[in-house]
Length: 355
Image 1: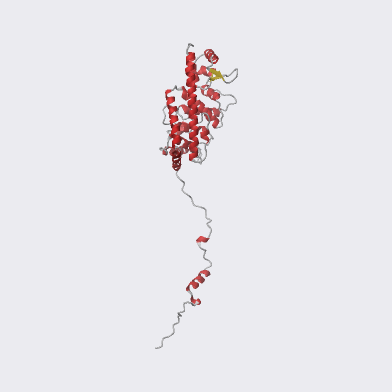
Image 2 (image 1 turned 90 degrees about the vertical axis):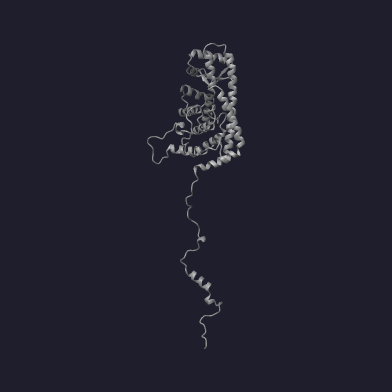
């Protein structure tokens, strides 16, 4: 039997029936299909990204604290020495340092309240025509919170004397919400040293929306109270006495903490030297004024140790003595070189101790 020739060819090299070319031809005919995805540009906007938690910043400050551990220990030791000094010293020393700190903070914030104007405002609520009453009020608040008042970590709204108004706009963020966010971060940073925590809180102040009034005094006073929260004698840690360089830091967390520690160290040393001079003056004044009779001389001595500047009406109000007794003793103290007049005026004169 004769086999029929197969209709299929065994020549696989025949170009007419190449399977690969046949598929390519079909693909080229599909002109309506889009090109490969990898060849098209990615013009789509990026999708939403998950925001890091507010407490994520604590890790950065923990690392910064480790970098400056030695410097932090030195500053903490000096703050402890100041705390012990104030614990053993008279109550007026705390008030004196608070007045100096508040006056220096006012210059840092741009209010430029001088110590004599602040002393008159605190003692007698007196202000001149050229004085800014709001600036004096802010400095006066700083003195009160640097000497007493609630703890900022317990009730920040009460510490700042701030409350939300009764009529509140719906699209506005409430103060208690902003304060709560800041307190949440500060509370979560339990492992940080109080000095580091104070630095972190100061630099997070505006980010939390707490500085909308442009008042940096609140942030500094709050930080000063937090830094000294472990002490018993020092109610606040000095930050601006002699200069507020530590409050002007910028950059990453290690740079800010290094500047903060340098500024606090300088402020503490300045405060300690000032207390040394006040103590030396007090011993000298007590010896020379022992010959004077009456209650006015020792009362004036205590007053000058408590206030950086004293006027005759202020002394009359504070110690309850007559104007004649006050002026007579002030004249005697000035004549004997214990105090010196600083205004150079015939009226509204003010004196400070000769140190």
